Image (cartoon, rainbow, N blue to C red; front, side):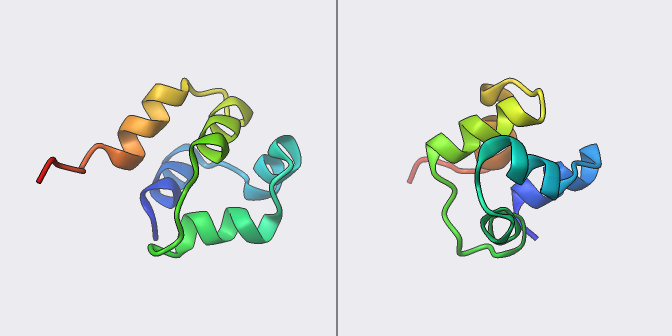
Length: 70
């Protein structure tokens, strides 16, 4: 499960609702929440944050907060 998937689980987010509200396919939402190798684009993160009524910066911090500078 990806960090986005963890966020959805913590908040009991319905993936179908997110797909409908963002215009992203259900398959893409599933890929973003399950597959660690799938890359989340900035525009997707922004649309998802708006769809689940979360500040985009808060979602970005949760999803990418463990990244460190080399």
